[in-house]
Image (tube, rainbow, N blue to C red; front, side, top):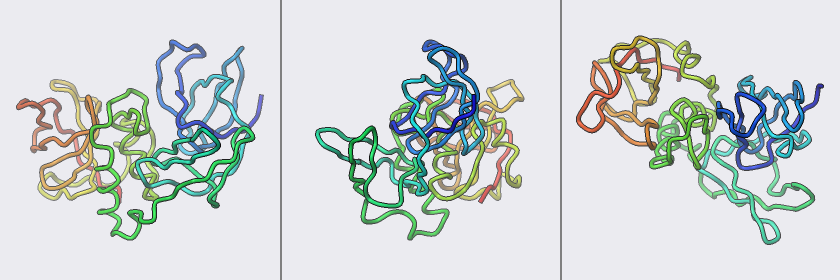
Length: 245
């Protein structure tokens, strides 16, 4: 089966297996397109066009392909219709105009008058990341309703025109490594669990020795040369710092 679709819901869980109880490995967010690779009963095996991530979505969440060229850089935008509305999350994609039609209903996108794009790139990225503070952690999440550590990094950079793969194991391969004493705002910091050597967490330098990341919720934590401090303890060990800007 070969088909193409677009996510026309705020977000759609992307699951490891074709069943509702399967692990949520990632998610599509509004406006992202995908290729349908296969079908198994009421489930579609898809590949996201943006990052080539694969997984299963319910057939009921599938919608025919429609081009969405613009990217939202606000935490979310509202698109009200007649007695209903759609929320478009940060990093979600939108039509060029102010209106769109979904399932026969017309929605008007309420764009904010001022975005972060007038700011220097690093400052814009930090403002985008800061907007996610207190968003709950959700494994596989990529939006304001729930987000994981690598999803936060990917979506924040996507909203600012920079591509980053989906998982920490892919993200750590990007950019140039920098020494701890040379880290700057916007750099990505990769961590392992204490006593381990494989990457399991990522955050972004917000300011000197301060990282914004998603663990329980999106929050600020202290960065030291050896690791990430949370609740007075070293929760993660620093593996490396990468500059992707």
